[in-house]
Structures are given as structure tokens and as C-alpha cells.
Image (cartoon, rainbow, N blue to C red; front, side, top):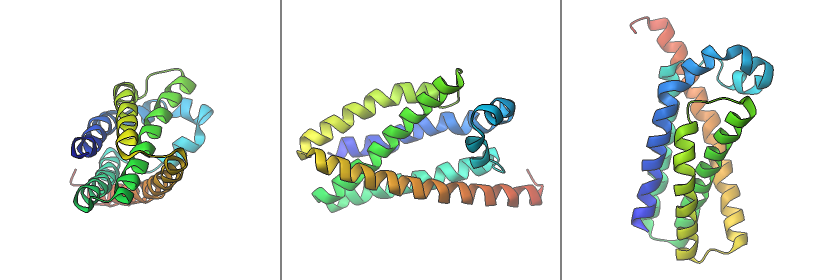
Length: 174
């Protein structure tokens, strides 16, 4: 179980590095396309700098590390299931990026690592589900819990990132 748990932060870091490097410049470059096809996505990231986005990702990484550490230290099935729910939310997030690229009909920063990390994530989910003998109902419940935690945290992380972006803009030392 230890190896599977530590693969979550590793995959998260790999995927989110691609996002940090290219996402905000890509949004700026394709603002018109996003305004036409995905205005909600554009509004969600409005006022966010690359540095602010990096801070939001860092906050999410801290949450992933906490979930992983608690599952490892606690050694309780319920903690493993909560971890699995968070990992499933991460895998669904990868799937969303793939659908975003298909919808926009072009490459988006996060697509390459989504295509690499999604099959690995599905394999891990399958292995952990077998190891823990997870029933379908448990998988559904903890997936919903994981998605709710990730969704609320995403809003929080983006809020922190936007506040940090505003603060940096005022400081003018970068």
C-alpha cells in the first residue's frame, strides 16, 4: 500500500508541473477562443498570474501530501478509502483535461501528462481496490467524498492564488 500511496504525490507533481509551466501563458494566448467556447473556464482563472497559479498548485500538493501521510501513518481502512477517493478525484481531473482538449480541438498544457498519468492512475485505483477489497458502493461513496473535498479545495486554492497575484502586482519587485 505504501508504494501506491506515494505514487499519488509523484503523479500529482509530474502533471501539475506541466500546468504551472504553460497554463497561464496558454490562457492569455487563447483568451478569445476561451471567451467563445468556455467563458466559465476563463472567469475561473481571471486575475490569476503564473505565480498565483503556482501557489494554488502548491496548496493542493500540501493537501495531497497530508492525505497520503495520514493514510500511511493511520493504517486504517477508512483512511485508505478517503485517500482512494481523493486519488479518484485526481484521476477524474485528468479525464477532464482530456475532454477540455477534445472540446477545444487543440493541445492544452496538461494534456500530455494527463494522457500519461491517467492509465497509471486507473491501474493504481484497480490495484488498491483489489487490495482493500472495495465494494462498488464504497468506491462510489468515497469517490464522491474525494470529489467534494477536491472541489472545495480547488476553489480555496484559486482564491489564495488570486489574492497572491494581486499582492504581487502591488509589490512590483518581480
